[in-house]
Length: 274
Ligand SMILES: Nc1ncnc2c1ncn2[C@@H]1O[C@H](COP(=O)(O)OP(=O)(O)O)[C@@H](O)[C@H]1O
Ligand SMILES: Cc1ncsc1CCOP(=O)(O)O
Ligand SMILES: [Mg+2]
Image (cartoon, rainbow, N blue to C red; front, side, top):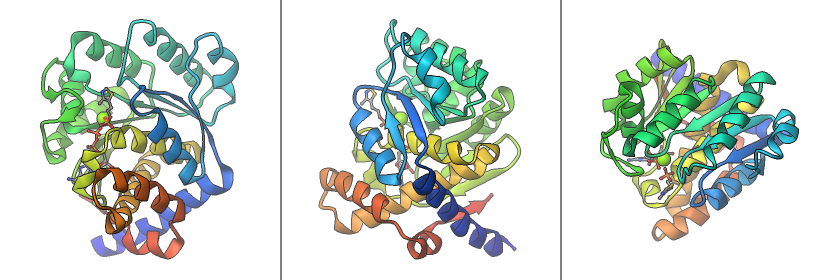
């Protein structure tokens, strides 16, 4: 029964990737300075259309036209926060899915409060590493080593369920296993390689990919999120076969994501219901 369920995920993940390629959803990204390049290139190599527009002067015109919005607080500053909140409000008003990456949310009270305020604007999906999801679920500063996690993803499954229940969002915790939950169901995506942690902004990039997958399947956010995480992980695995270290993995990961075919996705995606 479990093996049968797992076999259903490969075609599902392929269907999501194919739809992104066919529909090329427009994704507005309000993201950090570190991640802009990798995020835009990840979206392009998956077939989506990234746009890094963040001015509150253009958000009222632009956000209603996008297929999904991505907000990432990685290099948060006072003047960017109102722009993020405005974009989230407009996305919610126009029923556009939007996705939050709460980078280093436990690092300061300012960052934590910013993320809690953004979560009150009803994101469709929240994706963080284990320390970020634990900090949000506890609404407490601490738990984190800057932008990197000091916990394993398995440590954060209960926190993820609790955050999903309190926020109404699908919550994903990345790590060796990427867990995705709506507060009730929990699935685990078991693709990827540890070297992905040695490239800055892979977390940011996969959250953007989640936004693209949710853009083309907004009513099944859990399935779209798990598919995006698994597909990104498969691209990392194939990239690692050619890489000599983090810098070449970054290049090969993007190439592999661009070149993924049906047979590869269906045979390599590992998603289980836990
Ligand atoms: N130990 C690991 N094994 C396989 N993949 C991993 C591992 N750690 C992280 N990843 C992958 O790296 C990407 C970034 O995740 P992570 O490092 O947890 O996020 P962040 O960069 O936000 O801290 C995700 O696609 C995740 O699945
Ligand atoms: C290093 C760094 N500092 C602020 S944002 C950022 C990038 C974090 O990227 P990720 O969360 O994907 O590792
Ligand atoms: Mg991160």
